[in-house]
Image (cartoon, rainbow, N blue to C red; front, top):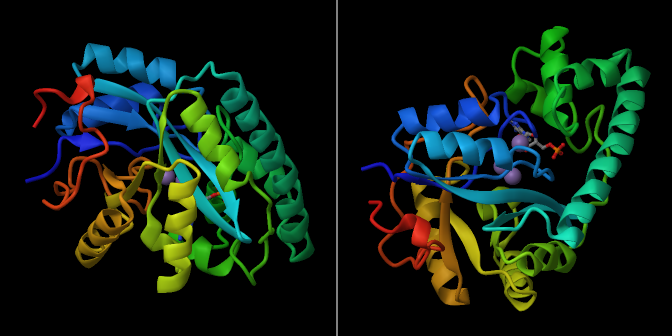
Length: 283
Ligand code: AMP
Ligand code: MN
Ligand code: MN
Ligand code: MN
């Protein structure tokens, strides 16, 4: 049976395609009863989503997905139950968004050098309410016929070794976790299976994340295979993490899975939402 809980998704405020209201309507239609909106590096959709959730009898959780640099790699930390007005969090995210703009200019210059022109304006056309991200460049590249879909873009462009790739320095792990926990939230390592870390590096990451105040890791996410659900449930247990669950939905037609399709957490997991008043009575 699918889980009625979804603690990871994106609206048009980051790189999703639905407005916060449309996203909540979609979640309701797909049987979601507890929803966290976790836009990349931006809190601008939370009020609208919370209001829509009230109208649909969905328990809403304030969330965010922060882009972090850890030992030269980009990883994502989800914050749940954050307080959007917490100044270090709000100002820290402001700085990340400014960095995204600078990176976008460099990406556009690189694409220009391989004959793909006007991509900065083209990407921003897809990012009207939102942060600028590689997803917006990807949509521009599809629109202009440089790739057949977004998934193909991320094979030919914007990734290491390909045109439009930019090494970028995001915020450090400890700082991001402090923004989240300082605002009263819990820090969750997003989709650990996506980082292509060997056993040793994964153990180092989990150890450091725990040491700086991380609470949970995503076990069930559309980025993981069922084998990875078991693997990361085991690692959560071993390292003393709670477990989270979320679709990473970005809107219809995007490569990530739809809402309302993920299974429940494996039985040996302690859910990150244990004890949350919002989740009482939902099953
Ligand atoms: P950014 O944070 O600007 O580097 O953009 C990262 C975003 O690009 C992710 O949040 C995904 O939504 C999207 N993305 C990255 N890799 C892929 C991929 N292989 N297929 C589809 N979307 C991707
Ligand atoms: Mn995204
Ligand atoms: Mn992510
Ligand atoms: Mn995400």
